[in-house]
Image 1 (cartoon, helix red, strand yellow):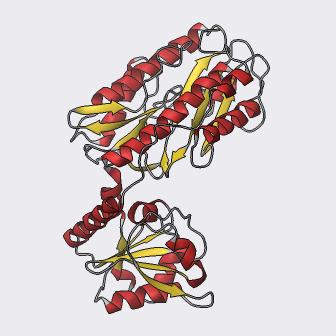
Image 2 (cartoon, rainbow, N blue to C red):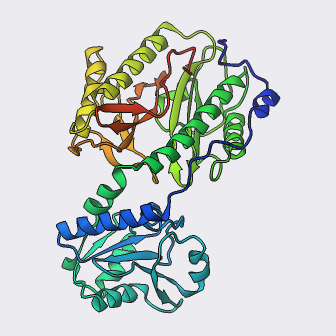
Image 3 (tube, helix red, strand yellow):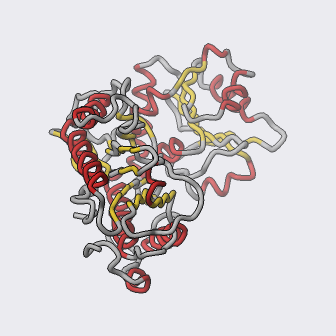
Length: 400
């Protein structure tokens, strides 16, 4: 083993877990107001009278409400002027008041009433005719609104919402950085406790325990641990695997801090790596580096994906999504949602801009044998990109 793999006992690893002390500050009320004014400017530019965002990442972004969507409509209606309006069940008013980050008027509805009628009524009161609907809203919300609004008056809010959320503020970057720092430490400790015969289930439980001990919002937001041939499946296969000498280990996990996500993957060898695995690992590292080097303001997202693929295709992998090679996009945006716009994929012509954050993970799959994914996130700066976490230096030394 290396000095980073299999060198810790479980008790030693747990002894390194304590609540995070250098915590990033919460998003301030003034920043929520700036987001709302930015959305209003985009609404005016697109001749949209109103914007409706439902429970989920966008409601948290604009109003600080960390609720998930359910069958009951909880949504924020934003018009060109006046306070935002919170449309919500009457019995939830107190719970929402406890987390609401902005001043807002209310449109309460009782259990037997139609909340979509409340939205239409509020629009009429403010002279709003066209409505941009949250791209994350359920189809049932669209159906409910069509009972009260002309279907032609309902448009996709993605150009407004994505434009607001894609470029992160310094406060958002600090929260993402904290989440990434936590997860990188958890990855280090997980590699440290690896031993012959350990199960994937044991590592998954430890990783969740570790995230919780550090003070993440709710433990691991997700965790995938795969050994040996199972690493050839980008999102793994079910069942418990036992670690054996010579296996590749792929761990993909993350957490949230005040709603902002981390998402880090490390692939390393337990014991001596075979020549084929080492060759593919080195290509993966080179493809990840090529994608990172391609990032600068104004570059189209798809060009970053293309930069990674050129490395792989020059080595005889692919082309395109053909295997052995890279079966999926090179990266995804990340923030209040673990996958959000923009995407580093062919066809996404979104120009990169300072503050945008994305993963860099051009995984290589060798079907039936193994896969290698190295995933770190970056944010775009004025002159290129900056890593949230330092990439892996070697197959037997996964941490810088």
